Image (cartoon, rainbow, N blue to C red):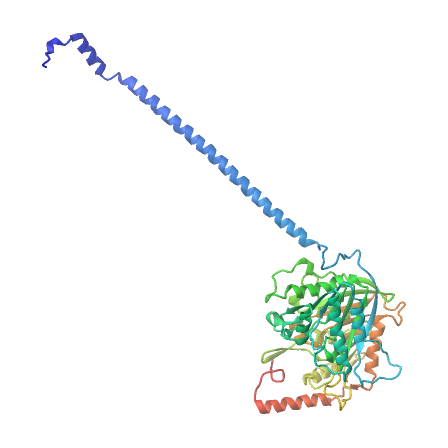
Length: 534
């Protein structure tokens, strides 16, 4: 259909053209501005909302961090609180320094080998075997024993030797106690993990723990002490060995009803126990293993009506947590406290430390003795065992100590070797294995011979007893007087022989002869007889 232009109304067409025209530019700009403002405002609002949310999120995160930090601090604080105090538990059986026993009875115990005869009026004490049996008979709750040897009993023992019978009785007694549900813990060096005695006791329910000293110091466990019912103690030279009940001359001390001292000695047992599954020393010790008493903070006790101060020492240095006195330091304190004399009875005296094919001088104790002799005019006596394994250089070091007193007024060092006569019908010689020192004011009883290796590498404990009033009310019940009497009995006996100048004792001659023979046969060999001095 064709539409003619003139047919369309002119007015309407003009209106249509007007409607199709763009609006005024000012209005357009205004509208665009409004839209832009609205958009910007919307975006600004969104940004502000996002920022507020971000602030809230950051604030929430900060709260979480603060809360987490507070929780961590609280946990650390709790740990510090618990480590700062001793939690009363089964390890100490509710004992504290406030409720423990400070009035104790103490007695020396000795093993005197058959055939080792003294004069009729010589000092004597409770036998080692009877002292140990007394402790086991008193046990009602627990028995903890640390020993360096466990050759105590066997299935095929004979009745011919008293020491074998006594060893068998002790083993049977331990089994009997376990059958009565008494807790028994034995601590041994790992080198004895195949011991028939320990295996038999384990089969009967006894708990046996092993300490791997080789991994720590290349040493051994030489400690020897008992703790019974958290109130009775034995410490001394004897181990749970038939020889300690037979041919060995041993000395130790037993404390009865002395739970305050138990608190400290038990911590050494606990330290050993804490290492039983480990081959490394911890970087820090538990506070419950710290020493309770020391040189300056000794435990005050009444022993047999005598006022004394007591503390426990330990070795090696790796095994000494905070406040635990090292054995060498304990020996120093006793020598330094002496005013008149120092008497020393040990099996071996050798201030050397051996390491593979080299050896070095160890001056710690030897130097302290020289200081006491020369600077303080203290009288010193050395009673050393002379037997087939005595090192040849022992003679040299003892002679050196004697030499420093030549032409020095008031300098006195005497030395004797304890050499019991050999018995033809015995397969093992009698040996004096005492390890103690007594002075006019104090005493030290330990687990070590005075050899550098022992103090540097081996694990052992010691005990220091100092009388508060050394010259007041001292009587025969004084443990210091008892130890002094034992030393003087041995010193003046027929078994002690003086060290003579330029004359080597027979036992050392035998050692030197064997050493020379071995060197000729084997050339340069390892061992303590062949070394380079550093």
